[in-house]
Image (spheres, rainbow, N blue to C red):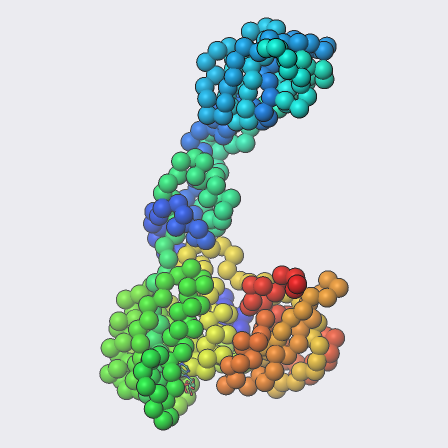
Length: 404
Ligand code: AMP
Ligand code: MG
């Protein structure tokens, strides 16, 4: 049985980035660029004014002077007429500099009267000019392969006319629920049945990773049904099953996967919840068999499946860092396994404080909703006192936001 860390490292070593595809610029948001992007031209691509004001020759302005205004260049206009000595051209921010100009004087520092502009302040050569190539040089790598596209990258790519960009493919993730007790959402709920909520929570988690879920429905507790659905699932890039992976006589998942030539890499990890997790490969394609309890399914997705999906979609940083938090109550566990404790977090005096979100039984879903994070209690320890620091994985995206 691998340890938690070993299991994560085995999984990560088994997967690699999918092929690249080209998508419309806005569709690349949140995805990973698959090639180095090189600047096709200088940015800015022409010298232009950084202020609304007057284009001048510095040599004319070494002492207070009055210059004749001979033209006007608006933003988007063209600098067709050169700037003659003793003259100024009215210019707007972003407008191209006229030939002969080597400084811009902001309008606030001037006085105008009858076709002339008076300049009182000393003018420094090159002032208020944005020079061609001062931001980016032609041929420079603007976005290295492996970068996640955010709005600044979108801005840069758009500025260089990149309407279509190469990104790593989205993983197509098949989701298979197993069990005779399950009915689909919307179907009548008879005695003894429960709704197949794992399919939806897994699909939501897959979407949150930026991948594409394919919900396969329910494999019933017989070999035929498992076989049929699993064959379908193995057509995707990744197959995730839930439930049927413990040691019960109806837990068929591992046996049928083996029958279909899927090679088990490990079964069971030293964690709670989530112990019976299995990981397997079919010709390099990862198959995750997660336990069925909704809390176990979510925790094992977060810790094992998510890093693999991120790696497949070209991400380089795939493990969420553990943060330190100060435990606010006692905790107790059996030795031998890492325990994940559902906790609420607050931020006080520069530290996270971690409070149990309530009943930690694997079957209790409510305390997962109330948790901002899961705290990782080490395998070898048994007793935890208030005030101890523990590792936490933050789940909520709003934990760092201040409350009103
Ligand atoms: P099993 O591993 O098959 O024994 O399933 C463990 C428990 O997980 C079951 O008793 C169900 O309560 C729960 N469970 C299994 N599959 C699902 C599912 N698709 N959605 C919600 N709960 C499930
Ligand atoms: Mg079952």
